[in-house]
Length: 176
Image 1 (cartoon, one colour):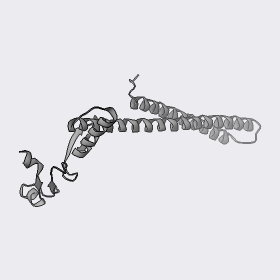
Image 2: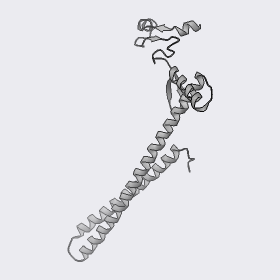
Image 3: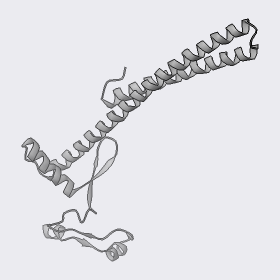
């Protein structure tokens, strides 16, 4: 059986003969266990199925042996490869959530400034209206601008809270 698995060859014609046309030819040998990258083991990483080649699992096993001093085989390398992949995903998620939080903070500061400016503009418009320099329409425009700025601030505060919760979720904090 070992010899059969170590010298497995499936041509495009053979794939077609067994009812699987379009499959790429596979040649597995002692020197090339993954058939030129065409044979993979699929492993669940907590979010999706990921392909891990025989080569990747052995490289991960070597890395664990070299860096941690723990001798593991291909199956352990497969698990190590999946764990390293999940760690990279978590790191990316945390970095993205942190960037989103910083962007939300900047937008929140900008929206606060816009509310202050709209409030000042309304005060000026009311003063100018009392002095008879402008009509009621300009005061209404200033009131509308203030209401829109306040609405934008509320939306920005909501986005900030969402960003903060996304960061907490990315680092594994428990929901409140």
